[in-house]
Length: 374
Image (cartoon, rainbow, N blue to C red):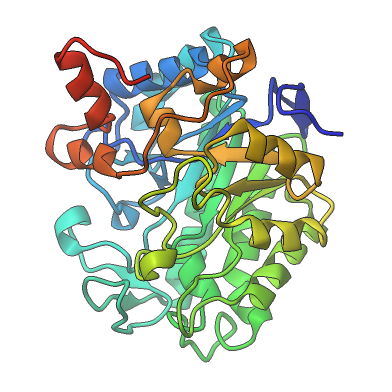
């Protein structure tokens, strides 16, 4: 039976436990995407805190794919020195780090990245702030090359793996979704065609980094949105990736337009809304041979260990709890199995917009009062 704190490997990458820091936008980079010392300190804390694998915040492969202020970029070699320091900082603390490759597609704004957003189709839907421009076949090919180039840079900079962000309504997910993909060419229509962009990116990356470098994907098990990606098509995508050699699939669900079923749900605490994407992860786990990660509201070791015991997933991914407690993994491993102290209020993301970086606002308030909530 899989244990939460046993050492495992994903295509040669050693993970000292089955806890994953799921990709989290930190807002700690320069406007062009250059990592800052503040981000390096954040990652050092997470690595020191004992998490098995640290997946970076979403990292755009082209400037028009930037979705958030302070987001990291991999669109140029100009950041090589900072990137090498970033990975060395994690490795010095005994951690492993994976870069998440990302393009926001239509789920951004001209104000954020400086031009009209692009997407599979020029459609006005709730998840888009403005109507995007439709990508040409030539631009799709260029983006495939940029994902490959980003992955190759990441490996050269010392990252231990890369992950494709194919969830949460961003560009790859937009191609998968019938709601946002209305194309009539080879990239639209059938599920095979809607998966084409994802599969071309994966193949390009595999060719760029080789067979011995871990390539992961974050995939929606469903968009939880009328007309969006459904569970059957998500399973098709997962099985296609598995057949071609993907090294792990992290299963999430929802988009910012999914209401109460969005990827980031307030009120997830121990015993309430825990593991809210597990049903999707379980379906995919039964149909693929690669490891599966589940993310979404997990706050207690009891739930995490039960998931592993039932073989519903191979790894447990968390995001907001590690903002509140970077040392959560080490605390749990030491024997203090009290649930994560995160109350899922989502207040941690507001400082990234106003102050240049996420942090737990409740913890900071307590510290200012001479108290501690952890």
